[in-house]
Length: 579
Image 1 (cartoon, helix red, strand yellow):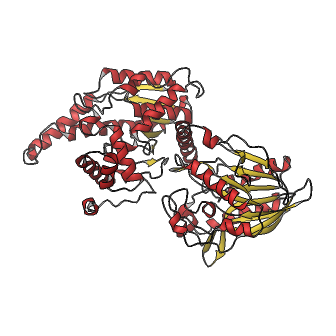
Image 2 (cartoon, rainbow, N blue to C red):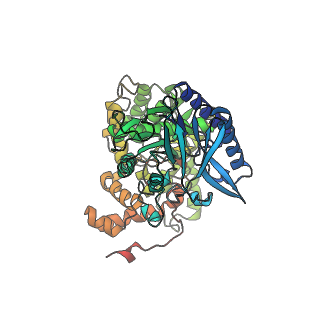
Image 3 (cartoon, rainbow, N blue to C red):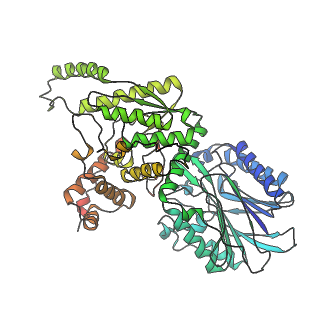
């Protein structure tokens, strides 16, 4: 039996456009002699559709389009399409419709609905109550193979994200399909990229295949939708757990695999799995480039602008922008202030030259002096001493950042370019970012990338510049090696007020991503308790800033965004749980 997995990049809500992608994949599969084609989860409307599902007529329009595709284009093959299914009385299922030769032969409703991290499926869908199988006839030999159908979480059961306790008392959909005689289980998914999750996925797929002695085929969505990035990496596993077909990551692909028909034994030769053979840095770079490219393409932006400071963060964002949108569509703007060093300006210019992007020089020193003088007059009249202020202070530092934010947004307005912000996760965590300043922008490229990962990505890019299309290392070495600094006061460095980034990132990873208490962090890291307590307090206090930040691309298990719902006004006492 010839199986095809349509790893497509849908746009949320673009039902007509997504339908064309599906129809094209069916045509290509038919030309290749495919017997069964499957799309990803909710392929007809894109995942996640969120509150579009609550809009009158949306789910019905998506389902109607999916059924029309099946009725018109399923001749000589079985086609599985992911779609919302209206179940009456306002109920909607996250489902599949299965057509053969123009007729509906089965439908399936997803049974396990994830409601954790970025997922909120209980809000929209009613769970299914039964499994579904279809018998597929192989055209070349006439043998019939029973195929079981499941959707995403039905297969993962929260194991890939550490939430398997949610399903401790629920039936295993895969086990039920195996008992129903399925020789192949096809699983449409829309599973977002998370650094390191791919290995866990492969282990789960292998375990299912070996446990039940069946073939398991997982087809995953690809592309960026808002903050989420879907990496594809669709794959087919044999009953012995070996991988026999694997799609590339981060791009569209029609993966075709020949399987033994009926109950015949045997398997295809094993293949190299790109999910497991590439480095974390290579995968992370691909994810960020795809996230930027699709966010801009799906929201209508063709060009981007960013402030280039000579530091490593803006250098990395500029490089990602050039890879995503083309170097001719990126503008780097240096905005030196009164404390900017000459080498920082030189590094910013050097970066733009290396990348081949346009460079503009826009000093803010004069604007800063004028604005500061105006504010100082107000502060003097108010009585700075009564306010407990000694000038200059943080006001002047933030003023420089806000002037830069105003300038970059002005350029955005005039050119129609999206502003890419450059703050990383480490800075966003502890509030080392300025509202209406460096936080101004449309997309926060690095908001889920810690400083340690920033350095790792920069070194990876420079070491692999040729395959990436650069004639030489694009990021100046001095931007990587010099001490990080905002340069908002004389001789300033980040470590004046923060622990080393190795220590800071360790705290962030344990507190934010693993939800661990300060007491445990102290025990496990050996860091000073006062340092840990201070950083945790900064993380908590900075939530109000993050709520006003640009959309940020999610690449770790917990990002500052839709998957982390932290209250701003709260007084949880961490010490109360210390022991």
